[in-house]
Length: 122
Image 1 (cartoon, rainbow, N blue to C red):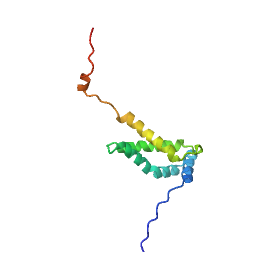
Image 2 (cartoon, one colour; image 1 turned 90 degrees about the vertical axis):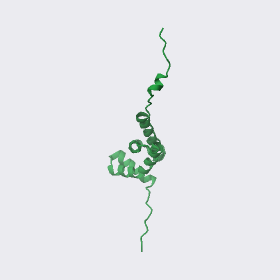
Image 3 (cartoon, rainbow, N blue to C red; image 1 turned 90 degrees about the horizontal axis):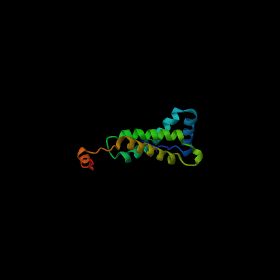
Image 4 (cartoon, one colour; image 1 turned 30 degrees about the vertical axis):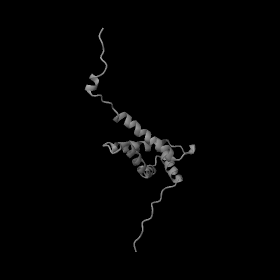
């Protein structure tokens, strides 16, 4: 008889908050690893939205992971918001900062510069 695979159990909000507490108070690497593995697909989906298939997708994923780690360090459950409600804007903010600082350089071609306003000498 073939054994059917069981659906993967998702950790509860309380379990996630416990992992966050363990990491924040004790620097528990296992708790941090569990959080990163649990939210990896979330970070990848956000990164995919901002990379749009460009060559720097992996960079954006890594920046998103840094945003996730920052959210894990700074999250405070006492505010009453879920971790996801705090983490998503943090991840998006890191990605936008990366794109603004590293990829949105404006290069004006020389021919356009030459068409610019002429300065008259008096």
